[in-house]
Length: 253
Ligand SMILES: Nc1ncnc2c1ncn2[C@@H]1O[C@H](COP(=O)(O)OP(=O)(O)O)[C@@H](O)[C@H]1O
Ligand SMILES: [Mg+2]
Image 1: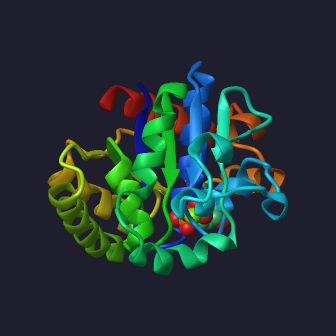
Image 2: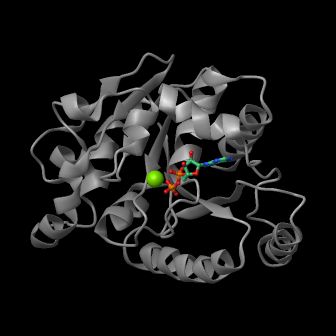
């Protein structure tokens, strides 16, 4: 039975999508079957796997509003062991439409539960908000991964996110665990970064994944070629760091 991991943080541009793509790819490299579910209307997770957002028959939007069943929304990728439920801008309306629907927090869960037997891991890329899309992702998941940058405001955002996770656990998903806090775009030469990391270690030692993802040009270039980092530059520091993160996350959930 597949394990479901959501990559969530209400802040944008902090490496959620990059982490979802590269952790999914690193897990698949370890011989597992992985489904990546794009739950952000920006569709970056979709294009990051080399899928054209404009030529999609079905997307996660159709899944959420009940227009299509799970299996029909899954598309294969050119990468071994990785399939995708894509997204595009059509998903932008879902947040409002979901409000009107019954079981509005469990739409994604109900569909993914039907797919769990077909995959070892399902990775969900969340939008930069704590609205119904993210709630659907958290309600469906066994674990949440919190990607974050080592910046001061990130610490403030983190306590807000922890509160949302706690509430979601109470209301929708008692089994939800924090699978890990993953530091992204880390530069160990910046004083602020090392200080913030020290704070994080103090309060969240058991949640923090062991190795931060370094800031790397190669990581940021990879999606423009439609490739995860382990395909774009498998010996890079970035690829190794995501490999390590994937290994730890697999052990934790
Ligand atoms: N480790 C990294 N090093 C350099 N650039 C990165 C790294 N991780 C992400 N980026 C870049 O930062 C930007 C935001 O990342 P993204 O994953 O899209 O964040 P989010 O999904 O949280 O909005 C993208 O341009 C991405 O390529
Ligand atoms: Mg994103």
